[in-house]
Image 1: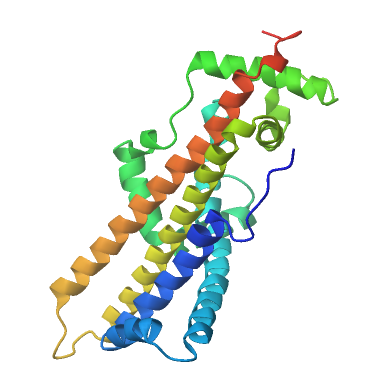
Image 2: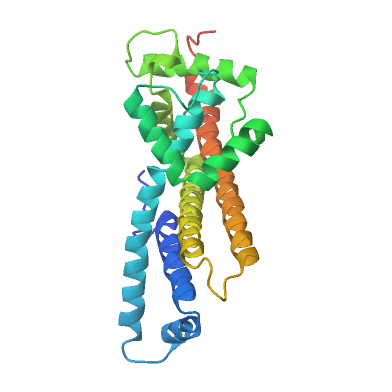
Length: 280
């Protein structure tokens, strides 16, 4: 039985509308703080065109949110995959020696450019993630027994689907196959998986927003340097706050990115239809 989908899902709300509206609202505060109260009054006033005004705001926020979401997928998520590989890979310990600075020179240049774009995340991920092992919070491998169960039942699933004969999941983009299979065959877990996708998409967008405002504030600091009303302590505190915030959002994104993947792997493990002829 097909599950009925709402035309406006929770992902549309958290993944697109909220990030877009947040950026608009922050810019209103930054460029003219006095407009903030007018903006709230504007949305709540009793005018004939209220509905049109609110609808216009929703459309702009939703459209901007799509742009932010896509941009975060090719920056924040791409950095995460380049740095740590896909969650399905490090959960299964399939590439224990994975490094960021690998590949041809063209790819290395793109990686360097990407690290520069998301500089606050890249710096703290290097300092805290590598030297202080914060990465263990969001890239922890699955238990060895679970890994063996996933490999065993995963190979059974691939065989049932008519995949070429193989003894290793390393040869496949197996998580894409697994996630589609369990989503189709585990109706009771669909909402949980959808929630994980929504949360990691939302947090990924918030991470990028923090990075963008980091660069905006840094530009304003350089532009206003030497002015009579220049307060270096406030500026540096704000930069530090945005740097830490961006990394915290990155950690949260990685947490739910990993949980979504682990959920699909665990559903493979407990699938009763994958017992027959299972390999060790």
